[in-house]
Length: 206
Image (cartoon, rainbow, N blue to C red; front, top):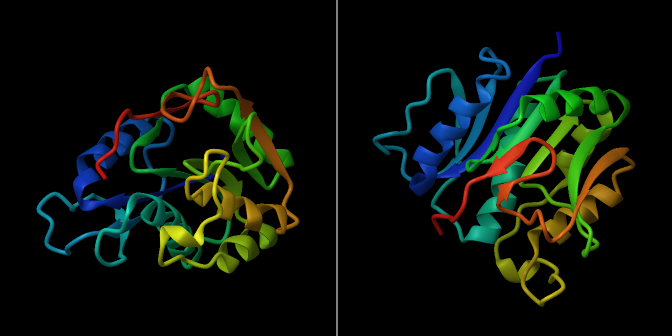
């Protein structure tokens, strides 16, 4: 049976959302290891998450910076402990909502290093949810990603906004990793039902 490992990033204001995500994901594999990068005070009253390995990463950051750095922090936190398996990374508010599509991803990942989402109107790849094998190439890529200190460090997207996905794409394309892309159009978008078995909760906390 494939070992599935879950990784998430979360801020204090989104802890309740994360708990919904963990509950939804548990239908796939209740015994999966869980790694969390947490931004906020250590004494948060609802931080206790049974069985999760939590890394404290400091104060809450702005949305783009926190999303990018949280992805880097939680995946590298996981790589400090795990050496094989299929990793499912998602933000605190992105959960598996279609088991059949998720199972198809588990078949697809047997032939690739990563699975990513790709908006058809852009050149970048998304990282709100990622599926990847732990191997030399993916480990080298994630270990090489540098955290950022300001949203102004990101490239800009098609409408001129700072784009953490563009920064992630730079590392992905230079990694030598093979990846399968789930392409989607404007009818799918970023939030709500996604085209590969995940759901991105509407709205955000910051």
